[in-house]
Length: 281
Image 1 (cartoon, rainbow, N blue to C red):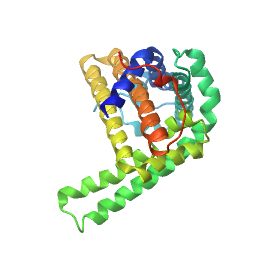
Image 2: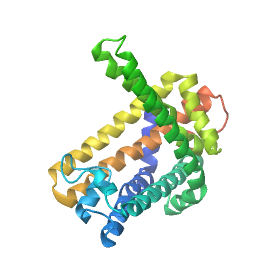
Image 3: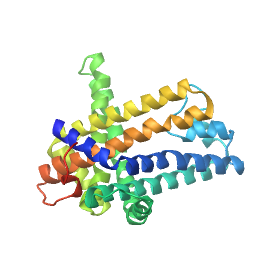
Image 4: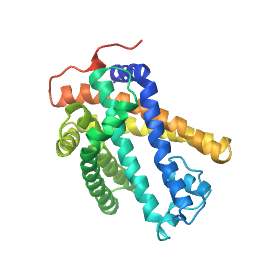
């Protein structure tokens, strides 16, 4: 574990500008664009500042309107659809950046982001649909476990059992994007590889999900703290920096972990990658 974490951090240190800027762009551009278009065209029932609070990743806890207000006005769906499309395109662009890091080992650039949009958007749609189905099934299973566990488990164990079922669902879809980049297969193959990690070596899947949650929560907590310290829109925008930073670290770490523990470990596949070439430091 320590070796994989060390190698992941080493990969991130070599390529952090491209990874970080790509993650920051995806954190800012979709929400900012949707909020601006919605406010200018009068599609949203709230002002620009409140729309940004709702559409950017880090929100002011307990401040501003609830996100459900966006569903209460005709035309809001246009802004939300634009937001969803831009998120999807941005996610495909990030895969282009990650592909450059994993396969080529050079510093990624904006052209790699655009190439990722062209290369991965179609497969990304398929992956997102399959992920949604898996997560919906996991949520249903978590609900059933929560209800049924109440009859056989102590009260304090019931929510833990439900969370465990939900964590299994997250673990099942966590590696799908990385399989798409490393294996260069179809969306169905990538999802099959990701779910296969949970069914064939569940400890690896759960371990990856726990690290994912740990780093993500650290980034979100740092962003929330920045947003509370610095008031207004400047604080909201600055709060995206630690979120993007945490995501960029996760990309490098999970890419190394997937190659070592899944591509070579669980599935025993061959192949050399650019991330193998250098060691930490």
